[in-house]
Structure formats: structure tokens, C-alpha cells
Length: 531
Image 1 (tube, rainbow, N blue to C red):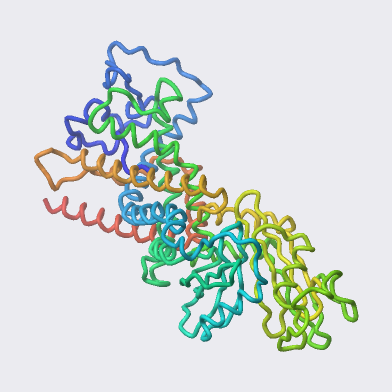
Image 2 (image 1 turned 180 degrees about the vertical axis):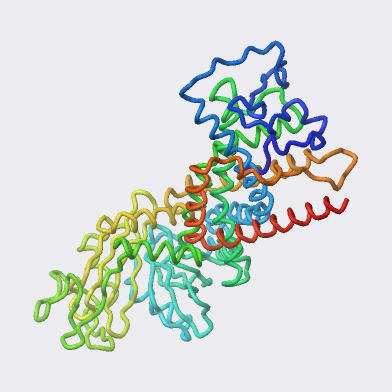
């Protein structure tokens, strides 16, 4: 993200001694050879003398594009200036909490080692005994699901609902799979199983601990992040330079504001793709834009499918894709297995959680899995929970009376948009590529923090005089849109209106800004007329 640009404003009083070597007053011209876009030498740090510089040969093919950019640049610059200036505090909070959140996965392993790890034994005890131990430790709770250990030395995580459980939160009871000893319990949040530290950081990042009203902050930040990032890229790429390498490599020998600009622009170019992806994936589960995204996915038939665990009320059989097994025998190999006898649910004989896992394994579900226990009218749901590439996210529903597969859902059969949404969200949360993903998120968050700090520094250095400590840099004057050709302005307005409809908080905040900016302009003109 960039907040400022070397040609910000046309008034020479905005300059500081540190900035005079890298800025030009030729913003008044919309020529393709606008002086504000010229690149200065990396060794001298100053613009070449106009009397000795040899003008580049005119390229007839590039003249229309250059002329169009010269007309659009002031508009992009003004939007970028205000968008960066006003949304930077929101983005700074999001970036700081996001940085801490990306590191919380590794912090959990240290802080909650007692609960998460257990000494490796010779054999594991049946899952049903582990659930019984969790129930004995917390008789007030109801077991809803269980996550099996993903590796040797990991504990079984039994999820329970309690009378005081908050929405989307459960009590996680950690059981030693080798001894059925309860090693502790913690509050767990969401499908990723976030523990208290990560949950707290997630809530601050998402809604500032303010609940639903606080989600406006994060959606507003995500709605503007891509605008600021792409606007900054256009402004930086539009500057003339000796080589393309200067796009991503800071200028050597630069000082003052020019050095800050060079660092800001080169880092922003490196980070822009990641920032835009963070913005897009963050919007998928926002309140208002998220609803629009979900509606479009539904209309395109790309909603995320869910495995059906519904039981036929008359026969006790399934109604999903694997249903219709009335009168069939249970799955081969289950008849003589330990624990088959005496397991009764609300609707009759229950094969038990251990045999439900066997059925799912036989159906091809390997790796880490979670089992959701039957409820009235529904059977077991066994789902893979390996979010790390290559993902394993298949799921099956198991008939609790026979062990037959009621329905199965393979991640490969998801609609493409549903797959991309799931992968995008997992990547946003730091799950898709494991530790590498988390380190990349931390680097992006740190980059955004630096971009914001450097952007504000450039704004400060552009204050009219160094003696005016409370002064600040001025944006490009109003009326930049008048320079844009009508053939470009009309589609641009339409595209902005559609974007504002699709991203409501972006549209509303843009309208508020335009109204305030217009009111300030009228006030300034009235004040000037009186004097």
C-alpha cells in the first residue's frame, strides 16, 4: 500500500528541502512526457538538467496510452492518497493482529504442550474408552465430536458442548490415547480448533472483541486494501526509470523522502499480489460482501456441498448417495469386532464410534479425521481434516445401526469455486502450506505495517515547512476527474458503482468521502470568495 507519491500536489510550497531533488512541478501538464513521471539517476539523486537532457524519441504507438495515463494519474493519485491516509489505521490494526495470529500456531504448541502431547505408549485404547474418560471428567458436557491424533505422541481431542458454551466454541478435553488419562481441557473455537491464545487474536483481528458490530472494521479494511494496493502499484509502475529492476530494488544513495519513497514503492510491488489475495479471501467470510459472494456462488451452483447423514425414519437406513441398504448386512469384518455388542443409541443398536472409524477407513479416509457423533435422525459423520497441501478433505456418513456408508463426499467433486474458496480461506488462516504459509503471512503483515509507516512518513515530510510541526502534506487538488476522457470516465464510474454495490462498505464509505470532499470544496470556495 502506498499513501503518497513524489508528485503529490502542484503547489511548490508543499516541498521540503529533502524532497526537492525528486519532485517536479510539472503536474499541471497532462503531456505523455510529464516531468512528474521522470526517473532520476540512482547515483546523483536529482533530475537531469532540461537544457542538456536529450528527449527520448516519440513512439506513435505508445502516445495514446501515455496520454491516457497522464489524464488518469491525478485521479488515481488523489484516490490513493485519501484511501491510504484514512484506511491506514484500520489496516494497521489488521496487519498487527494478523502478524501475531500467524505466529500463534507455533505458540500454541509451546503454551499448551501439556494438553497437546502425551508419552508414546505401546498401544492405544479404544476410542470409546477415551470418550468415556472425557465424560467422567466433565459430566455436565455432551460429546459432540472427537478429533483423532494426527501423529504419535498427540492427544485425542474430545469436543463437548456445555451449558455455558458460547457460539462456535466448545470445551476441548484432551485425552491420552495410550492410557485414556485426561491431560487437561481448554476452550476451542471454530473448525480449525483454535485454542485460547489463537482464539483471542482471531477475535481481535476479526472484530476487535466487539462482536458483530466490530466486524465492520475488518470488512472496511479488506474492502479498501486491494484498492490502495493496486493504486499504489499503478503509480509506482507509471514512473519512468532506467530499468525494470528498479521496480523492486530500492534506489541506492537516496536520502530523505526520496529514500522512503523508494523503499515504499519497491516493497509494495513485491507485496501487492499477496495483499490483494488477502483482501479477496478476507472478504469471502465478511458480513455484507460475504453474503454477496455466497449468493453468486449459489447462483452459479458452486456452493460448498455437505455430506448427508440423514437417516430414513422408517427403516433407520440412510437417504444419501450411499443409502438404501435396508436388510443388508453390516460391513465385512465388523461382526466379531470388540465393542460391537451392547452399544445402543436412541434408535436401537449403535455400532459405536470405533467401528464408525473402521467403516470410514475402509471407505478410503486416511490421515487425520474428526468424527461427529450421531444425533436424532442423523448418523455418524467422519471427515478428513488435513488442510495442508495436498489437502485431504473427504467425508462420509455412516449408519450407526449397520456401519454402512450413507453418503460420501470427495473434495475432488467440489465445484471449482468451492474448492478455491476453501483453499483461499485456509491459506488466509495459515493452514494450507503449514509453517511456510504462516511465515509468509507474517512477512506480508510486516510488509503492510512498514508500507503504512513509510506512507505516513512521506506525508509528514511533505508538510509546507519544517517549522510547522503540525503541518502536513496536501493531496492533489480537486477536479482531477475532469481531465479523464469521457470514453474512459463513464465505464470507470459504472465499474465503481458496481463494485460499491458488490462491496457495500466500500461503496458507502466512498460516497461519504465524496460528500465530505464536495462539502469542503464548497466551503473553501465560499471562504475564498469572501476574501
